[in-house]
Length: 389
Image 1 (cartoon, rainbow, N blue to C red):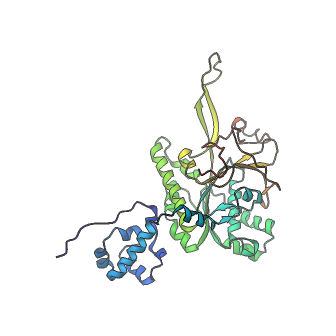
Image 2 (cartoon, rainbow, N blue to C red):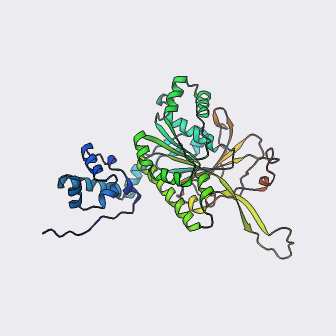
Image 3 (spheres, rainbow, N blue to C red):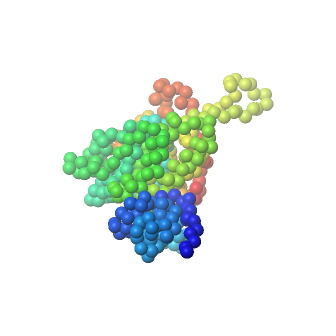
């Protein structure tokens, strides 16, 4: 008599959601598992050997091998410092098509990490996202990756025409080359917060089927800010944490760079009282900061902050505000037909307590209040060179 003990293997790792097709199993075995309703490592590891044999009709040795591969995929082995150093020599960077920015970032956006671009409307966040997509889709003869890009558009700001315009203006691509590039950029348009969460959680099949070389989300804040209840901070932060974790998972699992854009928001804090000072207003200071708060800020690997150059009409600035491998730096650029075009030499400097302009003086007439705001980085902007954040 066989005594059955329900010893299901439980795993809370996001890696357990990896689909069985990615375990390099025979197609017939994957099909047999699928007929039994087993599609992910989690599905497989929740069952005992006997249950799997009975459900799939596979022999014990095959079931054990499937479970072994699923366990390794769901719980990758730890790496020693030496192994990580050896692995770091193989790190891949993907160019942003802005040479000065690539120089500051030691080569571009690092595969396996999440890079956030934050700034006010009109500073070039979507332009940079489209440029990055163009670089990934470019043929290898032009130093591109000749790979596919998954572009999640939550603001309906992506336009194929702009992608083609950049390709023609920057590289002089022929119509045939432009069509080839356009065919490699796959745009997903979403209109609701839950759709965004579900889409990000279910991206594995999409990334795998396209063999995607990059993921872009423009923007991460648009739908989350509209629909999340700001009064329920715990639930909101948990959702943001889950989304950030899932994006990091896809970056690491597929070894691709993930680029997300973020908006800014105005916050108010009570002004410190000074003896003898007259209370001329309501006692609150307003300032502009990146949206989504500290939970999100600590989740991204690299943060680039875009701003208007108040002293140079028509120019904008990009601050490398947070990076595990690059120093804080500043780059001046313009938005042209070819995309973001930076000055020949990057103006690099450590960022201390200087503010970041939300609007230039030329545009301040349209939004007078915004002229008085500065963007305060969360967390502190000044980081030592090479410091892990």
